[in-house]
Length: 94
Image 1 (cartoon, helix red, strand yellow):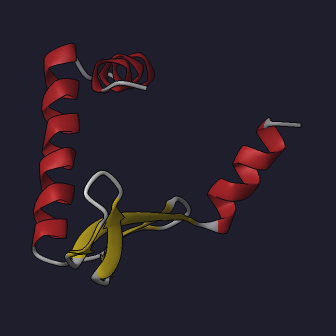
Image 2: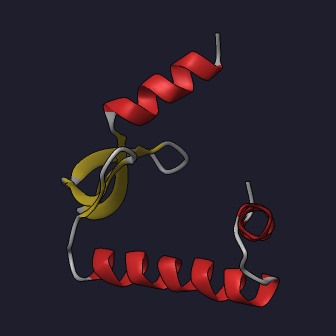
């Protein structure tokens, strides 16, 4: 689903205009991004948890040169669905 589709769905489910829905979706995206940059965890009860995890540095192989290189430590965004969301998804797929 794209941002445009989310905005369209939000307009259909609420009394918001397209402009208001666009500002709301973009505002939420900015808030989530800012929180992750600050290292905060986002907890949405009944939905899930969005947090940063750190992947350790690891060796990797450059096949074309035959060298071993070290891939540096990185931060990744991880989403974990809560049970309520997981159950809803599983019920819908039956």
